[in-house]
Image 1: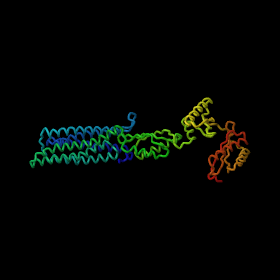
Image 2: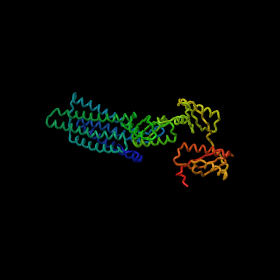
Image 3: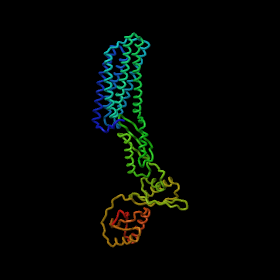
Image 4: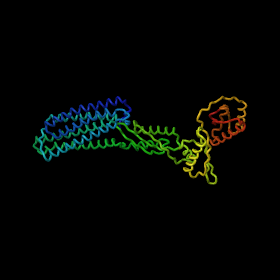
Length: 476
């Protein structure tokens, strides 16, 4: 498993990737030159095929060197997903070059086996060059592999894979040269074919490696999801509280960077703010699987199986960005009658407000056919801050209100009474202490009854606001 690139600074990552890619170019240049000279002097197809292989490795190393320089550039206006695909394209080009090498090696080996005899002149220098090549390939494949794993670089990984297979192909060539030398020394003529046969083995190794690399690079270029990652992400997201379903999950890779695009189902009465919180939790869940992924989360409303009639009514209102409250439903002779309060912008005209309410009621009846009738109480939702005149001190009024509250057995205490005058109207607010275990429905009834009694005893009151508190939070 590659380490997370975010653990390292971008400058460190770029410097290390460029350094190891540059060293690979220098080593490939030296090895290609040595193999080419020895291959020509000995006439060995095995060495010449290795020289051609190393020559294409040199081209691949140069491509890799420039690709890692480009791929690490940050996203810009023209490349909004970054430049990481350059690494994948570089690996694809390397695959093509390797397959071209194989085609030439196979063609020449078949010619030497069946149509044209070429005299091979093995030398100790050839063996020295091949052993040196093995040592260099071991060194650079490990160096490239270490940096490729550290930064999850497919281009460097492709180079590392090439050079690790070069070790095996060079070993096969050495074996072929050894058999040719043994044939000359002991007069075994058929051992002369060991060199082209060794070349065929080299081609076979290269074809195998190229096929593996080709599948990975083509998958990356075609935005194929990494094996198993999508199911792991879906499993992690489904554990997030509030997520009803994962409607879509798409993952793509560009270089060493992943992009995840998810569509999740949320209950349709979830607020916009809460949906943002769920999206953040989904983002964190994806990062547990792909730590450096760029995640996009889209939420879609879904009807939850546990919705009751009240939830369904509110869901329709929410769809129109409207807020209904005090919803009550009466079952009269098997028919459901709904009453609800709806807040609307106070700047609307009555006709506009009524038209919107009519459309809302029609949609509620369409979504919930069992509702026989709907009656909506339209309330004005303040759109401006009301200028206050003064805070009034009226001890007599306060005593009268406390006396009324004392008549309610559920009200244990009434305090923090505040009287304000706003635009010539009196506003009263107070705190009432009630038992901890009192059901919320009963609390609402007490508040409503108390508000009515206040206005009966003090008709001058325009608005009353009662704040209920549990006894444990208001010990005196």
